[in-house]
Amino acid sequence: MYVSSQRAPASIAACLKDRLPRVRASQVGSATELAVGSDSNNSYFITLTPQNAGSAIKVMRPANSPDDPPEEELRFDIARCAT
Image 1 (tube, rainbow, N blue to C red):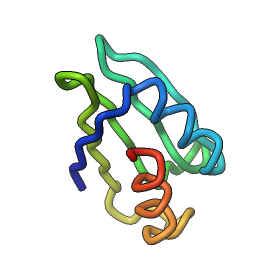
Image 2 (tube, rainbow, N blue to C red; image 1 turned 45 degrees about the vertical axis):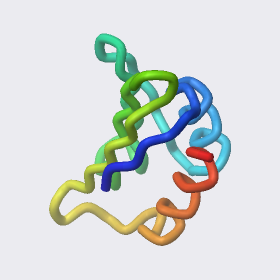
Image 3 (cartoon, one colour; image 1 turned 180 degrees about the vertical axis):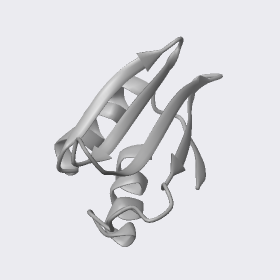
Image 4 (cartoon, rainbow, N blue to C red; image 1 turned 45 degrees about the horizontal axis):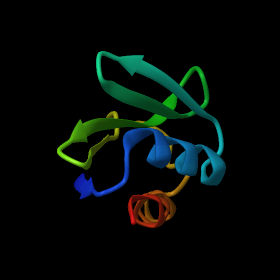
């Protein structure tokens, strides 16, 4: 899933950390990467990249990863944090 937002990556990351369980953040160059799920088996990887005055949001889900949180909940939380 790819989404763009007018919000800064740090603002989106803070919002997602408040809404989602078990989120770990790291910096890779100018991008912020979030791993969602347990330490041993991440459910999703979210990359927040600065873009113009906002952010590009990329979500990846590894094959055979658990559905925790459910994809519908993740999509809702991203939509709320991106606006």
